[in-house]
Image (cartoon, rainbow, N blue to C red; front, side):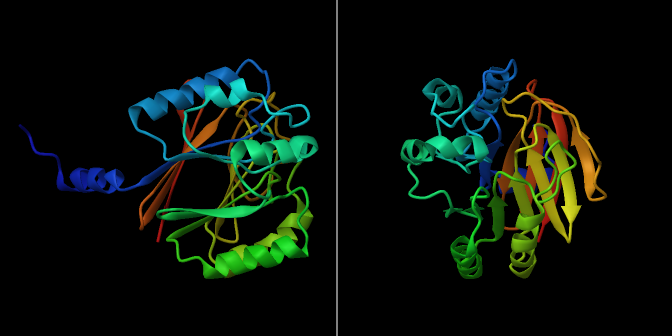
Length: 254
């Protein structure tokens, strides 16, 4: 039997100890591609289990009322949601459904700590919480998830107020990755050394881009979801469409 090259063997060994998460945004709508994205995620989960699913908000359209069959279509692992503007009217029901106490929180998943920000109301209390949580974290990788993007070339564009409030914390506490939704497309941007990914193509109707921002690196008007894999030293982010074609990939290293 032919031996694997040592570098490939080493990478396979590392991947065995990696956390594997799926990320989906703007997904709870009865569009033609919602079910296909869910099936693509189930296929990936069958090949190699997800440890959890993260959402970046707008979990249920039009007014946040939970639709259980949408949840049932996803791989059956723990879901850690962010919450968007369409979720606000039924926020209490979603908190109960997903088993979280409030719309902003953090969760440690081995090599990752995910800080879920509630972008619909980011006040001083939430800012103090986030700064304390980031400061206390000893996770190899810190990731922020929220609904409204700080940077975007999409229909809604970036959220200036959130950017001004959050960016100093992100740079001070070395957060390398921010995941958002709200704009119904896929975009990867980079600003101040931080990778920003908009993954808003999980189910809602797609929209084209408007004014391309200078921070923009990759843009796709496509259904999409993400897979994250993290070891202590590396974090891979892979974006897939509804056919499970790879549409973007980025690797972060310590």
